Image 1 (cartoon, rainbow, N blue to C red):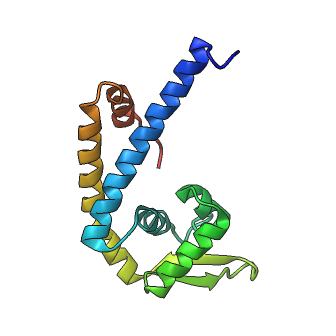
Image 2 (cartoon, rainbow, N blue to C red):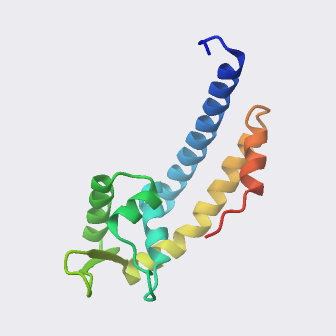
Image 3 (cartoon, rainbow, N blue to C red):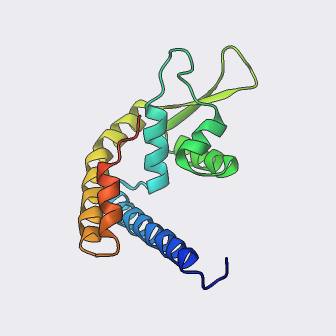
Amino acid sequence: MTATDPALTALAQGWCALSLLHGRIEAHIERALQAAHGLSVREYSLLDVLSRQHDGEGGHLQMKQVADAVVLSQSATTRLVTRLEDRGLLTRYLCPTDRRGIYTNVTDSGLELLEQARPTNEAALREALDEAARNPELAPLVKAVETLRVPA
């Protein structure tokens, strides 16, 4: 393959379109969440992921699993957890069966803020997708997002 290979160019163009769609959606949601709730997209995502934990077998996530879920490095995730902990939205505690492990839970205040922010997140996502769907280059990607069913 060369840099002018049509297949490579099409692949690169597809990746650019996907990246553009993601960037537009994230920026739109970021503005909405910041304005209405003082939350970033990453903070919202972290609260959302941690709110889905449960006390059953495998119900609590280790920091690496949390980092993977919010698509951040472990160090960036730890800094994000610390910021939200400082705001009283998260708490950390030692794993009862492995004192080296630290778990993070969403506080009642964090759950309340998350529930208030969910409709904002959903509405901003819908608005961003509707706007992107009007762009012929992004419309097929929007359709794919809208029909994609990923297990929770």
